[in-house]
Amino acid sequence: MPRLSSLALAAFTAVANGVALQPRETPGPIINFANNTGTPKHLASGILYGLPDNQTQIPSALLSGFGFNYGRAAGAQVGHGWSWSQPEFEVGHLFKSALSNYQLTRSHNGGFVLLLNDLWGFDTTQNSSSLAPGDNGDWSSYDRFLARLVQLINSNNMKAGLVIDIWNEPEGSAFWNRSIDQWLAMWGRGQAFGTNSVLLSGPTTAGQPSLSYNWWYEWASFVSSNASVPDQYVWHEEAGTGSSLSKSYNGLTQIQAKYKLPKKQININEYAIYNEEVPAGSAFWISQLERINAIGLRGNWLGGTKLHDFAASLLSKPDQNNYAATGYFTNGDYQVYKYYSQNMTGSRYGTSVSPDGIMDAYTTVDCGHVRCLMGVRPPATGTYSVTFNNLSSLGLRTSGSISVRTWKFPVASDVHFGRVDAPIDLGTLSHSYSNNQLVLPYYSTDNVTTYAWEWQV
Ligand SMILES: *[C@@H]1O[C@H](CO)[C@@H](O)[C@H](O)[C@H]1NC(C)=O
Ligand SMILES: *[C@@H]1O[C@H](CO)[C@@H](O)[C@H](O)[C@H]1NC(C)=O
Ligand SMILES: *[C@@H]1O[C@H](CO)[C@@H](O)[C@H](O)[C@H]1NC(C)=O
Ligand SMILES: *[C@@H]1O[C@H](CO)[C@@H](O)[C@H](O)[C@H]1NC(C)=O
Ligand SMILES: *[C@@H]1O[C@H](CO)[C@@H](O)[C@H](O)[C@H]1NC(C)=O
Ligand SMILES: *[C@@H]1O[C@H](CO)[C@@H](O)[C@H](O)[C@H]1NC(C)=O
Ligand SMILES: *[C@@H]1O[C@H](CO)[C@@H](O)[C@H](O)[C@H]1NC(C)=O
Ligand SMILES: *[C@@H]1O[C@H](CO)[C@@H](O)[C@H](O)[C@H]1NC(C)=O
Image (tube, rainbow, N blue to C red; front, side, top):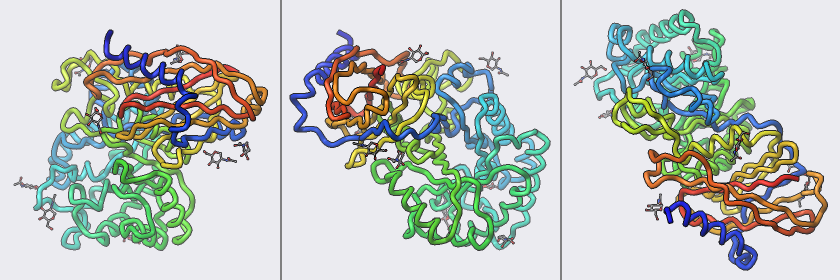
């Protein structure tokens, strides 16, 4: 028997025997059908880079198929930026690449985040003598850079949907490697864009907001007095189990209170480490982001031209080392986003993450068709109980039985590059419930596979 089928059978049997195993279950997510949280917009379907400059190289249907609706790019690692010299920037490929990615994203009605640090040339290819904005107290080059970008944005019709990310991950040595003060002085000058009717975003830190994190509280204090609060609050969630989105969100709330900053759209414009970019991790992240209504863009762990291909590890092709090669196909993770964006329609319902913070769930109901996508955050595995409350809000009786279908979302043996064309239908099982509540056991036995449950009221 092929490997995938035998695993599918194992999971199915485990679900069937669930009741006997109940005492060993860890408390999992709780879904409340009395808490309608609005129309799904598949907020987590954005990607960092991942688009070839040739706009027809990836078939359009493969991009819309995962709900592609937010891009972020600016020609990283494909040529010399402004800091090398303005003439190199003008003849070079960075801005052309950014413009092409912008146009492709707009053809999918997506928002597009332009990274100024990459256009400047601080995209990890800079060297120790490359000049950053404001080095030696000289801002003239940066001010010319901003003025030139405003021209380019206007002349290329790039304003719609555009978000300017002032600088990527300033706190590490890879992208900035300068002081907080110099970064904030640059931030203040970046407001030159604010009058150009495009959105601004930041502070785009690698670390998460907290009252004890200097890059965040010094930034908050500065933008408060500088009247330069951006349109989107941005940080990254790529610390593996070292970070928690709910904790980060609390950190932001505390900072907003202390520095009197307004509420704004949150954009986690890089989320998930490579090991989390698998069905289990993606389902976990989708649930986390949807709960706080944050836009989310998948992190991208590929380099060079691969960074500009594969839709941030949702697609693959036979000749992966040839940038211009075609023959694209979908991987296992892609199927999660396809289901999330195409099948999880109707209304969203409130869920809670498991008390241990490891298992999460995203739930929709469309014309009585309940769909619940679940994920245990890699590398964890385990057995959880998932609780569905207030079933009567769906028009169900408070006790009875429900026939639940299970979809399995596997990966191929080559996790990120192997082909998977569809999730696997594991069939239905009848479960009895009472007290207006259905409790089901969820078995995560590896660190990649995930499952969804469905039933029709
Ligand atoms: C049912 O929904 C109401 C309203 O959202 C909520 O207060 C209550 O806690 C829910 N019941 C359960 C058992 O979760
Ligand atoms: C872009 O990709 C398509 C599909 O592979 C190909 O037909 C076309 O020639 C490419 N265009 C350029 C300019 O390379
Ligand atoms: C960061 O700056 C220091 C000097 O302050 C330099 O030695 C180092 O090479 C720089 N790192 C990078 C990645 O540019
Ligand atoms: C370092 O980068 C600067 C431009 O930022 C360039 O002028 C210089 O030639 C580079 N040095 C080396 C050794 O590549
Ligand atoms: C914000 O900071 C920039 C750069 O430091 C400065 O030029 C600008 O005048 C400041 N704006 C306000 C309103 O303080
Ligand atoms: C998702 O919806 C499409 C279109 O209605 C349907 O063909 C497909 O079978 C559905 N997939 C799943 C996993 O339910
Ligand atoms: C409804 O769900 C949202 C999102 O999960 C949550 O923030 C909110 O507190 C819930 N409201 C109630 C009444 O349970
Ligand atoms: C996931 O499980 C596989 C197989 O047991 C193991 O080789 C791999 O190291 C695990 N990955 C992580 C991130 O723990």
